Length: 315
Image (cartoon, rainbow, N blue to C red; front, side):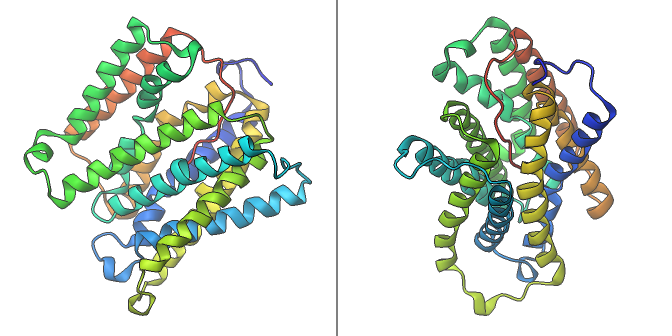
């Protein structure tokens, strides 16, 4: 394992980094296709999108785990199986569902901007769970700056319009960001196990939990267009399965600190894809908010290097 920090990275490291960024960033435009934003009657409901994405991702990860002869914890190991179960429900199925629901009315690039604030939530909650992540004045300043960006992103017009579809969707994006934060906290505190086993385990539990939501779906009324089906397939293969496996390879080659840079690059790539594919253009206040969030993350991370072990991030 390379020491923490970005250090000197090989061209292959940066190539894999770019591919991983694109895979995670593709989750948002793929979700837009899956739900057919603007014309929901031509797309799939969030329950189906979430379940199909997780199920396909779980199948691919389980095949990879068994093909590489990974060692799974014994069934009596309640701590490890419990950790995977909770991470699957709270840290995977829940954020996937709420963000998918939000993207019925929120642009893919705007959803990605909200999730960019996840490191700020992590820094705030980690203070209460990890002794080596106590709050410092620099970290507190970073949180104030970053959450100021979130407030700008949400906007005074959203506060005035509480209850509107757009405001509810943005609130769901924030809730999804909080779920991703809880996922990170849970993963950092989880018992040690092979990365591919951890990923395959919690994605599988997430998939199983998502099946219960299908009970509420009227499948006879669905008439998805081909692009919606392709969006779901893309979600399962790319940002769910392939990204997890690529992440684990990069963890072995580099470090968690190096990979944390994706928090800066994913929103940019997602915005670029959104502009090229759907003509999405964010307002100036959204761009300013993003700069505030990035500044807050940067300031909060200057207080010291994390000693925690790497964990999987999902988009």
